[in-house]
Length: 212
Length: 65
Image (cartoon, rainbow over all chains, first blue to last red; front, side, top):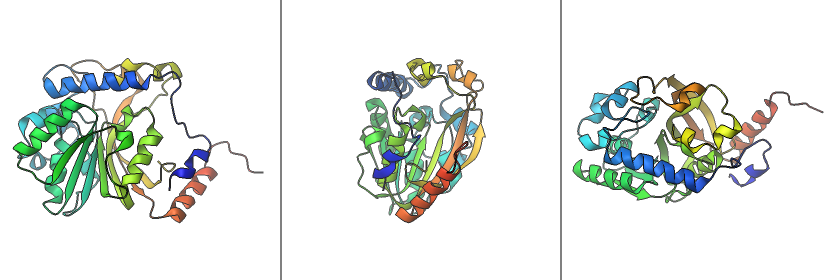
């Protein structure tokens, strides 16, 4: 369904002058710190304070391990866009320490399932430990790039993601990958960021700006 | 979003999620806000084609000949 999109005029695919490998390395280093030392000072809020800012219900956080909550670093609230339905299949793209995957796993219940995907090994390890501590058997975590999700075509009813899409060097490729794993009429429920002023081309090559 | 195969894109919330963060963000000068948005994967090729056609009709400055 997405093959012919390469012919659509005006769709930007890549950013000239951006070293994608260097960008991914820098992002992994930043988020490995969020996994290991969430109490450090970052340029974004983390943890329970952030969860309150973006409107997470306390009820959702009940039973989520404290360490998982501490490393929360999203920018929005995917669950405010609609509660997940028992039995649904969910993919959490850029799951980080797994807070949203764990919340989703509880919403979809034992007949549903959740796959959390993150490129940062420290986050995947922390997410697995959190799910184990929470006693969940319907969620698993896989280390991979969001642009090549290790999920079968049309597997998911819903894709959630929180503060991740803005870090994709090729946003169209990332969105097309999400479309691939979603069923027809599957839902995207995303927290992310927008900029109200245009970022100059030079800025798009600045990895420090990507990181914040 | 439409180019990737989605329809019914809607931003439902935006808010300053960086205010008061421990370190100042270089993204602040671009007016960066947190947002929530939803979209739906088109049900089939026909629905997607319809959304794409509508999009191409809405390009600012487009000239019809």
